[in-house]
Image (cartoon, rainbow, N blue to C red; front, top):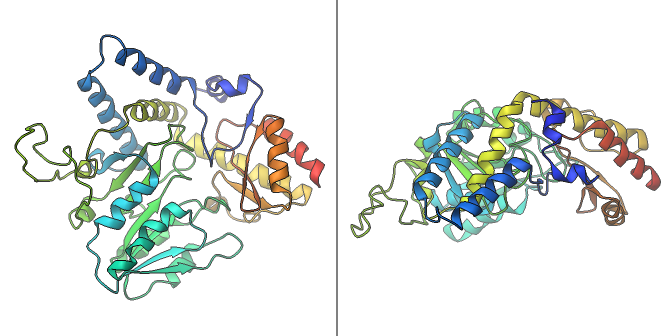
Length: 376
């Protein structure tokens, strides 16, 4: 499958829409649309309650995800969003008064509030101060305290686009017996993550951005050794071993991550993610990451030529993913003007945020830059 084949799968391109806003929401491609439509058709005619068929798709999707992140499928569970996914670890750990959590001051709130909510249990939160939109692995490591029990970080920061060296952080966490939690929503689908190589204990990711899936659907990865120390707070009928013995009421939790998947999941979310993952596998994750980084570097270059400076200017490509931002006093005006021209980016906190995916082209970026030129 080549790039032109992929571009033919996105209906918005045929309508002359330039979409460079994947850090907010990914567009649906025809394989995803077809899978949802097929599921709707089946559930509205003769296969209304075909749970075994759906179960096969769910199992396959967990296998695809585990292969994508180099985990095991029994370590994957589905939830509804990244916030609730992070609440799984925040509420599941056996905290002691005095324990500390290490975050940073430019995290998306989904990776902050679940941990701040532990204050009533005597758990403290330390924030590493960012510098020009960057929180380096070295700064995180320097901020570790004797009572630091958990470090949580977004692989890619939602505003600046800085990609942290999570392999280095994970290595130190393992050496110091610190739990390492990763919010991967701005990374997976754009760049690769190896949970074993990076010593990640817990990972949370929504499917609606770079993964090109649906809103209201997410997944977690939880390492077996971490799960064995956790106590799930939200237990459902599917969390237990003997789930289909409905009147048995035996609260023996599953040994797999499915213990955290307490009830019925969003089946359309499963179908959508399954199809999107197959597209990624067909095109190749190395190719996807290469394209994303190439596009991001090209955006940085063209912005520099216009005099707009990104926090990522001059950085090694290992610290670059799909997001490029720059501050502008007319960010909202630019956003609205571009939207009228069918060019979609984001305005966030006084920044213009551009987030091209692997199927975007230099021609699309050039057209965007030509529009920016009006505001120089």
